[in-house]
Image (tube, rainbow, N blue to C red; front, side, top):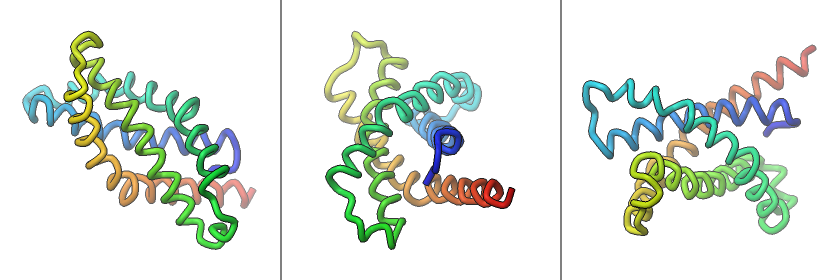
Length: 157
């Protein structure tokens, strides 16, 4: 886990960077298929989606999730098995980010005035089905490994 603000920024950058690129590609493929301009379409939308995701993570979802987790869910004996902490926080983060980023994606794609509950519900479910395993099995472990290497390098100095 990040030990300070600088590490939090690095960790969020890695995590959001990987999650956003995969989720954006997934959503574009689901909406319009993989076509000749697919990669360009993903790359064009990536910077804005990354900025929005990073801000939501750092300013809203992250602080709310950590407050809920450490005030209501955390048990001191979990410190012996940090993976429980990481998995619980990661799952809660995915729920929060999918909730907000699904709305962001629909607004960007269809406009605010065209949103329906059915459209949002479908997007939320489809995004959760990819984001949760992606986070728990691939992106989360990679980012925690990289953060651990960064922390080890810092500790050696």
